[in-house]
Length: 431
Ligand code: EPU
Image (cartoon, rainbow, N blue to C red; front, side, top):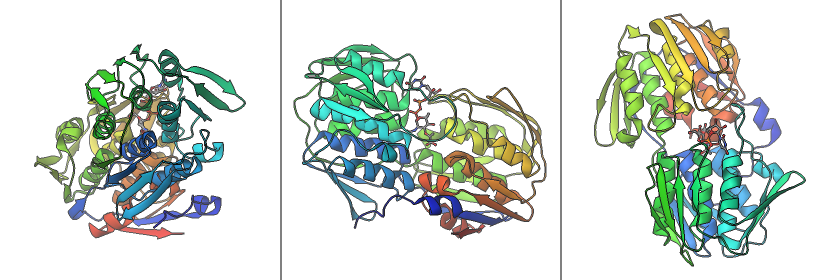
């Protein structure tokens, strides 16, 4: 079964959600596989001519976009079973994916590292992705150069070429998640040892290392700020299980909290959500924790808190907007600081249209006074997590909320409307 083609422009602009709010969510919800870890695993499959099977892959927009990118290089990508992606990159015929495919998602840039590792040449336009601030790729490019590649710009594309990659000691100016992953993807085939210092330690980086090690790579230290990679001559096919999506899990936990409901979020890794759990508790939300689940009860009143989005294990920037939606319902003045991206508060204007009392100072701090009753109105999903925040706001709003441009949400959340409705929400998709 081949994933359907890239969402066309008409579909992109016309889909919307209609949400009738003020229903407390109750029940059990199962978390899907991680969006961002799936993209890393898909790129890793380019490093071998053998079959790779990736289990627990969500059927979401970004996975389809990434499938299109890999296919454009000559890889076969298909659903071998529901949730299981088979990728075979035996016959790659290109090392430069078309820019219009690359521009659909940020994760597409991971093909640079993988193709450099596989064949010593790669060319890729600057990747697309959410508009959440400047998103340079200097960390990736400098790292490729330190591994011995020549990197230059040719029209809109970055080109990297190396007769042989050589292991190196690389300090990252910033612990970029995709930057770290890209360098690991290239370094696994370099001659000798690569040490990445100030590496990102997000679970998606550890998951990529786990898949690559299964393929025969020798990577140690993933999940810490120092990663060591011993280059190997060849990688083989592997079966890899994708990690649960910590951001989707967090979004459902917040949905329970904001609606004053009680939801068991299953199939997650609580150790990936420590910071969120602590902040929810601080705000007065009851959270019980099991081996692979969280039970979340949204008590009232909620208390105002201060939240900072930071690199892992700090609170994920991808949960910053959802947390802000929750804090519109907390008593007092909450502060939300975005410390990863420089412009990720654009959703605030949309929350305000619903009656939220939020002001921003600069582009990285939001000050929220609550609780304010939210009123359903027409708002726009500006990116995947901003869209999630508006859904959360819609769930607690009086009347009907209409969210446009939900293709952003569909890029990152698998059947979010169906999952919420199974918990008692009323979310209608209108195409
Ligand atoms: N940065 C640099 N130079 C670089 C790369 C990044 O200065 O070369 C800076 C950025 O400007 C930003 C910060 O580093 O201020 C963090 O960016 P990072 O590179 O870590 O983010 P990313 O790798 O582009 C991934 C996720 C994002 C997630 C961030 C942070 C994927 C496909 N994307 O992006 O996910 O927010 O890490 O955890 O893995 C999302 O899923 O909604 C999403 C945006």
